[in-house]
Structures are given as C-alpha cells and as structure tokens.
Image 1: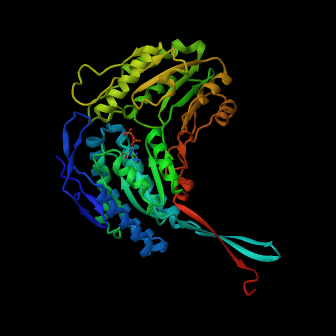
Image 2: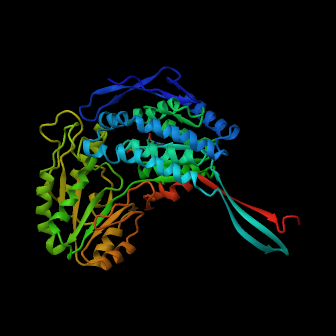
Image 3: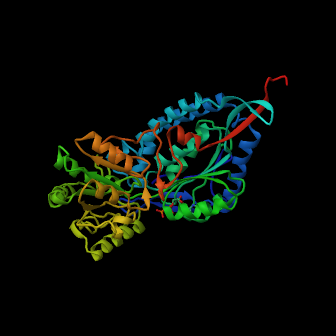
Length: 488
Ligand code: ADP
C-alpha cells in the first residue's frame, strides 16, 4: 500500500480540510493501492489564493533567471524520482511495461530540460521597429508576459505526461499553477506536489488539489475569476463545458480533447503485411490515448487480406502482466470497461464484422480488461468509426481511391492525428497536406516530442502543447510604443 497522498497548498503538503480521503484503485485487479486526499472547495479556494499571491506579490513572474534556476532544481528532483513515477504509472494508471519507457513515464521526464532551455533562451522582448501614425513616429516593442494563474486540469490516461507537460512549461513561462489531476490518478499529481516541496519551489507557485469528485472542484477552478487561463486535457464533452464556463469571463483556454485518427495505407506500400500489422498498436495502453490510430483505411481490393493479417496480430498480443514489457494492460476503471463494451455492442448492432475480441478475457476476472478487438467492413458513418472509444478497438474501413481515403479520413468531428503509408513520397505528402489534423505521420515518422507542437483541429481542441507554440500558450502579448527619437 502507498501512504496517503497529500494536497499541496501554498508550499505546504497537507490533508484535505476535513481529513477526507478516498480510495485509489489499481486497474490491474480493482484493489485499493492507498488513499488520496479528497480536496474540497475550501481547499481549492486556498490553493487559488496562494497561486494568485505568488503571481502578484513575488518576483516569480518577472525574474526569469531566478525562476529557471529554481525549475532546474525541480527538474533534477523529478528525474531523480523516476522510479516512483514509473511505479505509480504501473500501479495507479495500469500502464504496462512498454508504455513506461514512453509516454507513461520516461518520455515526459526526458522533455523537461528542453522546455527549460527554451524558456531560458526565450526572447521576452522584440523590437518591431518604427512606424508613423497620425503624424507621429513611434518605436514599438512587443513584450511577452506570463498570463497569470493557470488551472491545469488533467486526465487519467497518461497523467505523468500531461501533468509534466502542463506544469513545467507554465511555470517556466512565469505563471503560477493549480493542478487538478483526475480522480482516478491522484497520486501521480500528488507526487508533482511532494517533489516541488523537496526541490524548494517557492510557496504558491505550484498547488495540487486532488479530489474524488470528477467535476465539482474542476468546475469551480474554471469558474474562479482569480484564474487567468485554463489548460485542459480530457474529453470533448468536458472541454466544451470548460470553454462555455471560461467564456463568461473571457478567460484563455487551451483544450486538448478527443480524437478518431485515421491511418491510410496506400496500395503501393512496400511492406503491406508489416504496415497493416502496425494497426495493432491501437492496443498500446489498451487504446487509452487521444492520438491513437483507431481507424485503419485500406484499399478495398485488399481489405480481406488486411483483416487476416490484423486478426493474427491482435490474437498474438500478450497482456495482463504488470511487470512484463508489454504494450497492453487494463483499462483504467470499471466505468471505462463498460463504456468500451457498450461500443463493441453498438458496432455489432450497426452491422460491422467483429473479427476477433469483443469481450472481457475469460482468464481475467480481476481488473478492467477488454480483449484486443477488431472490426472489419466498417463504414465511416457508423458510430464506432465516428466516436472516440478509448479502448483497444480498431475499425478497418475500405476505400476506393486516394480521394475517397482523404474524404473518409476527414469525415470526422475530430482532427487530432493521422498517418499515411506509401512508397511514393509525393503521393504521401499530397495526402498529408489535405488531412485536417494537428499532427500527422508519414511512413511511421514520429511527431511526439517535447519540442514539437501537439494539438488538434476541429473538436480535438484549441491551441498546442509542447514546442514553442505550447510555451506561448502561457504568455500574453503586450505592445509598447515610445516616441522616436526617444527624446521627443
Ligand atoms: P473522462 O470522462 O474520460 O474521465 P473528463 O474529460 O471528464 O474525462 O476528465 C478530465 C479531467 O477533467 C479530470 O481531471 C476531471 O476530473 C475533470 N473534469 C470533469 N468534469 C469537469 C468540469 N465540469 N469542469 C472542470 N473539470 C472537469
């Protein structure tokens, strides 16, 4: 059992005001791994006040060198605790071994130094030259300033990735942060708070409020007039609620929402079998990734061949051992397991062919597993092709020609990611240009990196995380004009 996790408010690790806690459940077996502080609205109020004070009354926002030095220390402490992040990813998130080396733990820890280097070298002031207006010449400067108090609201699928990718760039930009992790994964967030204290981050710059209630603390945080910007990753439905609430006071929002990403396999691809088998990567972390490829578009003439290849690949995926370097584990919760099974029932009712999987594995009565599941002969207007399932479920959709493939890939409310595979680079690039998504992979190219912007078109979100664009989400722009010559 893990010790009870704490809140971080104004530099102090503390229990929730009434001492309330709630159980943190392991996805592997449904058993409790420990208790987490169940933060209340009063705890949240104190956290926002602390973040506001740290922003308004200290030099955190203005002394860039001092702040980056403090964050370098924090980065060292975070990296030194890599094993604790890895253990929590396994025990709290249900992240299988192969994902620990990637988004569940090592990738985000590896991104921090790059973000801090970027912030350290950032040009906070630019001279855009002189201009004459109304008979007067002015020299104009563009200053970048931190946006203020940031609410970072994060989901349960890759909490270490998303907590780190919000907290570090926001702090590096000079903002102060209230982090509200998902109810299912409180300890990953609480560890960020505990280590902030160990690293000696100034009081109030980072606050962490965990809560067993999914909506009330998050909704209050979004609605609070002391919060300047909201950085949210989660479902499109919750993103819309957050945007509507933030609109009441025109607060800045960054939203990273759902996806239904398509990979187009062209008829000229060299290694057809190997490329098609890559569709089984939908099982990475049991499909609980917003940018996961969940629709595989194959030439109609080779549909059945592709399905046979995928069937073999899906049926050979090992899963269920928390300590093995596997790509697939359990779903996060009973609720999520039920949701995925419901979508599988919908797919069957819609007339798609269930090729393999589709249920709870017979040998896994504990935990929240769903078998690797493959649907074939799917038409893109079916709900299983349009809606985000967030489980190990791939739909195979046949297409007639390149135009048809582009039309199908774009026929989605989402626009997060996508892919194309072809031996003809010109053809692949032409398709890449026509797909309306925020990230895109050609022949397996990897866009996921700390210095690359990540985010979506359409209902997949607003704004970008990581890269220069991600850093600038946490900045405001001020244009300052002085008379020219300066003595005028
Ligand atoms: P899911 O339904 O898959 O759990 P959500 O998008 O609802 O995903 O959750 C992502 C994060 O948003 C979590 O931290 C959750 O507690 C929080 N959240 C849920 N509802 C709201 C809301 N109305 N306002 C703010 N945050 C919320």
